[in-house]
Length: 68
Image 1 (spheres, rainbow, N blue to C red):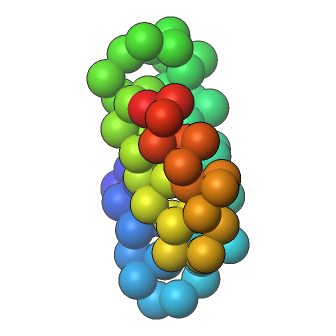
Image 2 (image 1 turned 60 degrees about the vertical axis):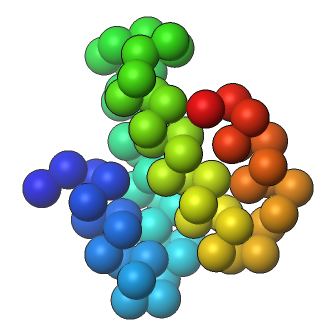
């Protein structure tokens, strides 16, 4: 199971901070493996943005969405 899939499950269970850690780890791995402009990086940024929105971190979510 990939970190984004586990992150989604953890977020649905209410552990937003735990999901954040997994999404950040997945984003770091995607950037390292594929470079900044790869679609996988955009996907991980989008998932991270959704999680930040769930957490009420609207400004951080907005900037993360823009980066995606």
